Structure formats: structure tokens, C-alpha cells
Picture 1 (cartoon, one colour):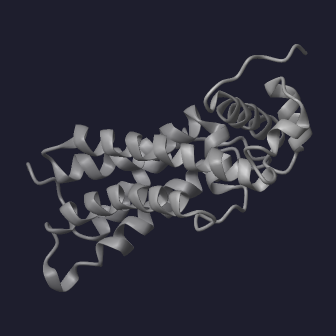
Picture 2 (cartoon, rainbow, N blue to C red; picture 1 turned 180 degrees about the vertical axis):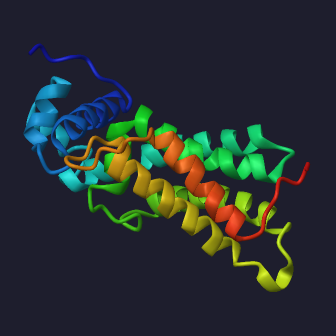
Picture 3 (cartoon, rainbow, N blue to C red; picture 1 turned 120 degrees about the vertical axis):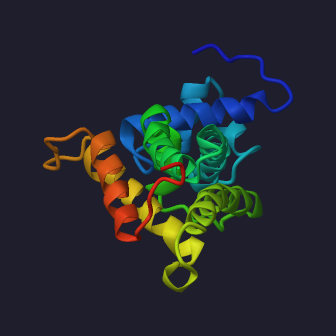
Amino acid sequence: MAKRGYHHGNLRQALVEAALRLIEARGPMGFTLTEAAKQAGVTPAAVYRHFEGREDLIAEAARQGYEIFTDVMQFAYEKGQPSALAAFEATGRAYLAFARKYPGHYIAMFESGISVNRTPELAAIATRARAVLERAAEDLSQHIPPEKRPPASMFSAHIWAMSHGVVELFARNSPGTQSPFPPEDLLETGIGIYLRGLGLIPPDE
């Protein structure tokens, strides 16, 4: 493969994109830095000018994934306004949409075993992503009597866990876990049952 001319960080991004393709095809531990370098069209030695090892490369892929994820979640939240219920439900659907559209990033973020605390930058953007869902939960929780209101962080964590479970079991083609219902329907009805259990009704009804 002919070596390409990379300038001003292009090589670093080319390596991340190569890693994302390999992660999607083989999983986060199914490739070497040498293979990532080959995909990017550079020598293995060039990789180490940007990343100390495969985990650092995956962590950067995860960081970029969280950047996209935060934007997707924020867009969903804003699209649902001014209804707190619509905004909250939209963030749940956005989780599933992100996993479908960006599988390499999703795997790097949630299935690679890389801690969000590996770098300050990764930790910061992961916190921002969680904050969007927590804000949506906080808005919606105002419609629950204070004595019955769960903390927004718990509220959002429940929906995050439900969304993650639907993605992992039914939207990522896991062997032996096919559902007779589309993942979108499973998530929608699951969120509906959860919200009914809290006694929530749409604010505009």
C-alpha cells in the first residue's frame, strides 16, 4: 500500500478511523496496532508517534464517539422541547439510533473495557453525555410529587440501562437473542411502562 502524505494531525485521525473499521469488524481486541497502521497506509513505527498502544488508540476512538453521542443526545433533547416527556423519550431513542449508526464508536465506548477515566478528556465528554439524559430526567421529574420523585441521576440511569440492554441484546445481532419485536418497539414500550409506574402523564394532556 502506498504511503500517503499526512499533515497536521491527519495521520492521527487516519489511525482512529482505521481502528474504528477494525473494531467494527473484529471487536476491540481483535486487531493489532500493526494492522491499524497497515489500514491507514503507514508504517507501524509511525503509530507510536501518536499512541502508546492499542488501548490509547481505542480510548481516542471512544472519546470521539462520546463527542458524537453527546451531540446526538443534545439534538434529541432539544427536538423534544417544550414537552419534557417528548424530550426524555427522544433521548432514549437517540441512544439506539447512535448504536446503529456508529457501531465502531459504540463498541469502543461501551464494549472495549476502556475506562472513561483513562484520560481527563474522555472522562469530561462522558460526563457531558450523561448530563444530557440527566437534564431530561430532571425536567420530567418535576411532574412527579416531591415525596415520590426519584433522584434525576437514578431516573436517567434506569433509562440508560434499559436502552443499553435493548441495544446489547436485540440491536447488535447477539447470537440467540433475537426478539419477535423491533428494538425500537421494545425500548418505546419499556420506557412507557417505566414512566407509567412513576405516575407520569404527558404534560400537555
